[in-house]
Image 1 (cartoon, rainbow, N blue to C red):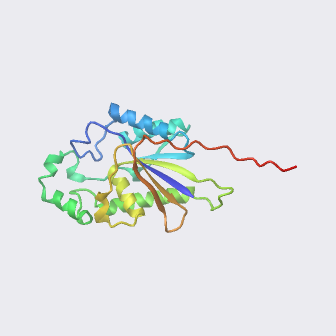
Image 2: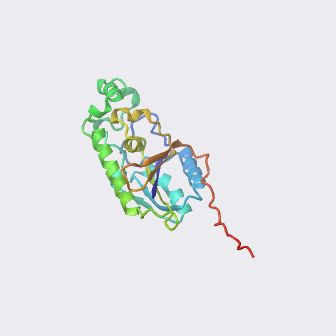
Length: 223
């Protein structure tokens, strides 16, 4: 059984005003760094095997405290990168809100190609192929007595995670914007290698704590 921890990067100073996209050099702000630290603390008892990240700075910076707390390294994966918004990248939300295509995006996102960029269908295919590849890499034969869950963390971006969750929930792509993914939030997918993965959690904020593992029970023999 493989458990995917899908984590959105923490806050930065650009995200509330501009469509950041793949703009280089956008780092976490102070609140974002605190969010990353709190997330690492919340997951200190999670039996993490690996931490993967989008190559963009804000995602890597979110992944680093989590990886360090488990003596792991952050493995960047190009396929986890943010959506290519093309000509929209860097524009303010106020500017975008005036565009007819922006309104069309909100109504029928499956029919939109970002000018000079990707379609959301292409993005969903990219991210799910990457996640399914990681699942196959970590999948172990089902044997609850001998094989513990393989828990891996994937740090990426809001639309990337929403599109992945829509896929695992078997939602229509046009409904993906109904899913909310907050900064530094955690969503959890459990996959046993079958065609029926389970979404265990969506958009969990970091005031939770992963339960500490309990020592195995010993059974005394009756004399």
